[in-house]
Amino acid sequence: MATSKGKAMDDTAERVAARKATPPRDGARPAHGRAELERALVLDTVRVTEQAAIAASRVAGKGDAELVDQAGTDAMRRVLNELHIAGEIVIGEGERDEAPMLFIGERLGRAEDGAYPVDIAVDPVEGTNITARMINNSVAVIALAEQGGLFRAPDTYMEKIVVGPPAAGKVDLSWPVAANLRSVALSLDRAVDDLTVVILDRPRHEQLIAEVRDAGARVKLIGDGDVIAALSAAVRGTGVHAVMGIGGAPEGVLAAAALKCLGGEIQGRFKPRNDGEQQRLEAMGASVDRIYKTDDLAPGKTIVFSATGITDGDLLRGVKFFKNGARTHSVTMGLESRVIRFSDAVHLLGDGARVTIQV
Image (cartoon, rainbow, N blue to C red; front, side):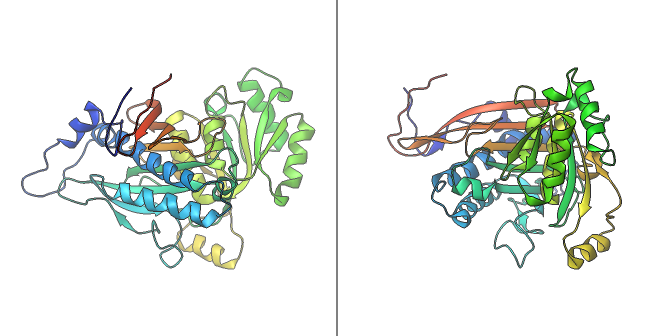
C-alpha cells in the first residue's frame, strides 16, 4: 500500500540532481553539452505527456473532440511552463491567430538564467476524434531539440513512408509501392505476404491501399494517429512493418524526431492542399519536388521525445483511473543518451489516494 498528497510517484534522484545544476553567476546562458541537456530534460519531458494524457483521458469518450484537445493542451502548457527551459513552439496547435495556446512561436518555460534554449514540437492529443470516441491508439506527444533542431513544417500535407531500423536506407519514396514492400520484406527476412502496412483511412488512399494489397501485404487502416503508427513500425513486436500515405507535415516532424532516436527512417514530400499552402512552402524555401529524409526533418544533435498513451494502442497502454489516481504508460527517448525508456507510472493525485501496485 502507498499514500501521497497530490503528487505523482515519478520523482527520481536523476531528476533532482539535474535540477541542482548551478546557473552561471554572471547571468549568461551557458553552452550546455548535448548529453547534459538530455539528462536534465528527459525525465521532465515524460511528465509533460503524462499530464496531458491524464487530462485528455478524463474527458475521453464524451464525443467532444474540442474538449479533449483543450484539456490536453491546457495540461501540457502548464507543465512546460514549469520546466527549466527557454522554449519556442515550432510545431504546435496552429498559427497565433488559429490557436489560443501552444501556437507556433509561443515562448514557454521558466526562461531564467541558465535555462536550456530549445525548440519544441507538440501534439497534446494525437487523435482528438478517436479520443472523443475512446478508440485505440491516441497519445500525447512532444519532442524537444536544440534551437534549429526541428524542421518548421507548415500545417500542410505530406506524403510519407516510414520503416523500422532494419529497412532504414533501403526504401525510397519515389519507388513503386511493390518495390518498397519487397525491400522491407527482404530486410526483415520475411515474405511480403507477412507484412502489415498502416495507412490512414481516407478516400485519397484508395489507390495506395489497392497497390499494397496487390503486392501481397496486409493493410491496417487507422482513423488518426500516424505519429504513434510510425513509432510502432520502428519497434518490434507491434505487428506493424511500415507506414505509407499522406498525412500531416507537422506529424512528420514529430515522427522524425522519434525515428532518429530509434534508428528508423521517414521520407516525406510536401503535398500542399491549396495555393496558400503552396506559397507558404515557397516562402520558407521548401520544395514540393524534394524528398525530405529523417535528418532533414529532425536535424538536431540533441533530441528528446516522449509519448504517453491516452487510449490503449499497439505500443502504449492508455490511462487507467482509480480512486484519486491514475496509471500511465509512456515511451521516452534521447538521441545523445541512446536510451529508450518504457515507463509505467502510478500517479497519486488526491488526498487519501490508496492503491495496491500490481506488476
